[in-house]
Image 1 (cartoon, rainbow, N blue to C red):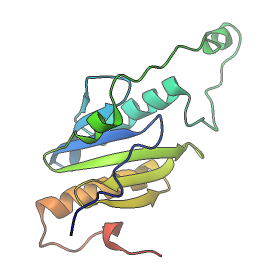
Image 2 (image 1 turned 90 degrees about the vertical axis):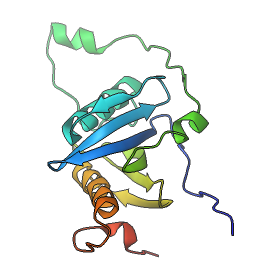
Image 3 (image 1 turned 180 degrees about the vertical axis):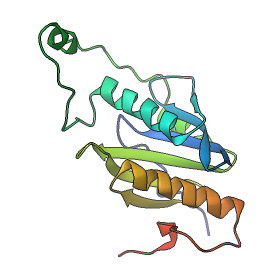
Length: 166
């Protein structure tokens, strides 16, 4: 039987591939890739990872935020900037060829509501996709997958990757 990798797709302009290369002292470490840069963005913890992704989403203005920073007076003019052409420099195929030492994940944030993110995450090595309702839940899914890889005999924890929902 052939492995078809049915869950391997980017599917949106804001799709990213996270390559996890380390998980030391409960800190995710790796490289984040997206279509608008040929270079990856290294991160040494989940905070750096999420801030990098948030900057991308703000730059793309996708998905739209439901809450904005408040500004008054002169600051308001800075927010009204001209749209810059956003040109993809990396194909989806190139993005999907990136892999981390401990795990690779395709992140598709569909909404930024309630000051958080909602979307889908695909664990590439397992070809499994699950939905997440917050940034915290997304990070926990990544940590549980990496923990499963580093300690396969330990089945305790919050690993919801293996819960089949139909």
